[in-house]
Length: 226
Image (cartoon, rainbow, N blue to C red; front, side, top):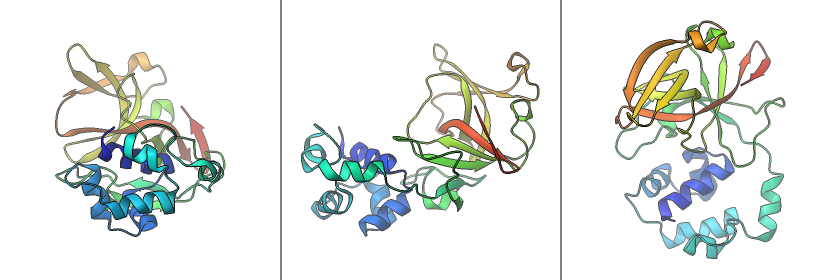
């Protein structure tokens, strides 16, 4: 496993943004970002901090083998309180040295909700819906949409939060792997068979970024799940 992937996997496992992770390790956000994007090697001091402050198993960090967390810290992680959930802004930038999780792309943070506890192994993020293009499944203008940002889940059709040409969207995505295309639909009726195709995107486009699969949304203090 590449060191950049290891660092990102640790951060995702803890459900932290780059800024929160950097604060916990007492390094700059730029350091975390540059290691994750592969433009900088992980320093020995950063490795030591991961072992001492986060409880990462040194052997796993060096070899990728065994358990990520050392003995007792694994138990601590299981009962750790949920972190605040970052809310993605409508405008996002994924330029050089930057990911969608970079602090400049986060507009605010919200407290975890008891009906939507943090899920083990997932990085819960949020996005505020704009418009009524997804009203058919119940997502209305202004609703807070929760998505799993822990991995690139472009393997099955579903409701996703994604970025295209610098803007963030919540839409139904259907994948055409043989043609390497992504079909983007609005859902204004409950029957998904009547979803309206609004755009077709090249899956390899540098302007297209999947942020995560939608898990639930908050409407007038009520949580609805997909």
